Image (cartoon, rainbow, N blue to C red):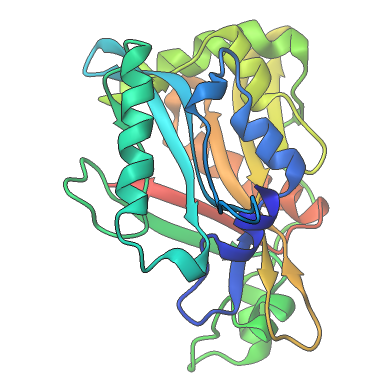
Length: 288
C-alpha cells in the first residue's frame, strides 16, 4: 500500500512533486478508534498479486446542523497509473465502500477531491507559508513575485525565533479538557464538523514523532488554547539538490474565547514551532 501511494498518488500538474505519506502516517490515519478493517479495500493483479488499487474508510461522527450523524471518511483512493484507462475501477471501489458502510448502518460518506465532483457542499482555499524559501524556490514549490528582490522575498517570509503564547506539547492528561473545548468550538462555529470522543482526541492529537504535533496553552491547570499540525512530505522529482520537501499541514486548533486575534497569534507560533521542527512549508485550507 505504501509503495502504491508513494508512486501513484496525488502529484502536481508539472509532475515534480508527489505526496509521500510515511508508513507511520498511514498506520495513524487508517487505525483510529473503532476502525473497521472491512472498510479498507484493495485491488490486486491476478497473476502477480501486485496491489494496483486502494481505497479506505474510517468511522467518524459529524455534527450536521445540530444532529450527530455517523459517517465514513473516505481517503487514499488510488489506482496504479497504468490501469487508469479502465474507467470503471474508481466507481467500483467507491460503490463497494458504500455497500460495506451500509452493512454497518452508516449511510453517508464524506471525502475531499482535487477535482470538482457532483456535488460539493464546501470548497477550500489553499494557503501555504514558506518556512525555508531558499529550498522551496529552488524546487519550484513556491515562486517569487517579479517585483520583489530575492532579499525582499526572504525578508517577507522571515519567521520569528520565539513564540508569544506559552505553548507546550500536549499530553494524555490534557485529553479530557481538549475534547470538551474542541467539541464546543466545533458546535458553535460550524454547521458541519467532526465530533470527537476522548479516544478520538488521544489518537488524532497526541504527538507522534514525525507524524502529528500538538501544543496547548494552560492557565493554571486549565487548558485554554490548542494548535496542531501534521507532517506530510512530498517527493521532489528531477531535482539535482533536493529529493523531498517537508510540509506541515494545519490540523485542529482552538483559541481562548474563540478570539480571532488569539487564533492569528496561535498560527504565528505554529510557524515558529514548525520551523524549529525542520519543516520547509506550512500549509492550511480555509473552507469557504
